[in-house]
Length: 336
Image (tube, rainbow, N blue to C red):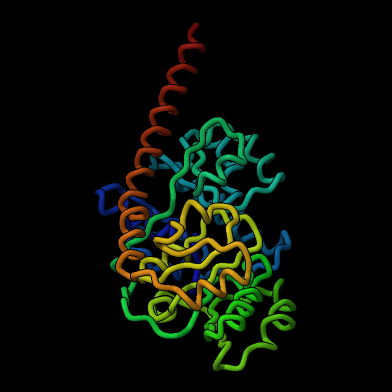
């Protein structure tokens, strides 16, 4: 279904393959990413309740994956936290993309692995970390898989986890104030079930406020493509917000609260509007007049998958070169 990190991994991997780079994705047996896949577990495990026992398969799979990759890979690109712990024992260069928001505990953990090449997904995220080697690479996407629809219908959309920090309840309030129907799509994780039952479900009537469930690519295209605007009333510092550029790829402008990377992604008055509060968001929703063509052009120019992949290739080359230099230096010191 909807998974921003999974989509990112797939697009990077397939983009690398198109550049004639030999790439392996360590995943689960259900993955359909169009590159070589290796897996330890046949089925995905989701959702997680957060207990350590729920993460045992991830820890096991990560250990197996890195041991396997160490046999014949030039560089290991990590997208999960447990993999960092193996970087001190495997003599290969590591690249780590930070998908998590800033947390003091995570930052302290990162400090123990200074030889890793860290990639932040926004400048906002990068300014909050202190690792010696960091660079920002914004997410990109392939606009050809998103349906561009210049003619919009009279409804607003919300796509994301149904959670307080994502502001689903505020999206409902925007719809009520603007008088424009709202369609909500996203996962209700066990930890936010009470939030859904108390603050979202009472407003659902199947007409004015509608919950359409989780959304795969086909459902995303249908939801976002026809939407007058996508609402993004976040209540936290968003590390990137992949759904923002997905909406823009459909020619659908975004109405968002500022927070985290939002000002880096949304161009005010071009691809949407950054709003101060619920009242302004409702007013923008009612009076919106941004050309769908311009919204689509913006994401094509600034968030292409080709540009993203090219930057990651640069990271890999730098990591391999630096690692080789460190090995030569280490050998020289030993001889001396």
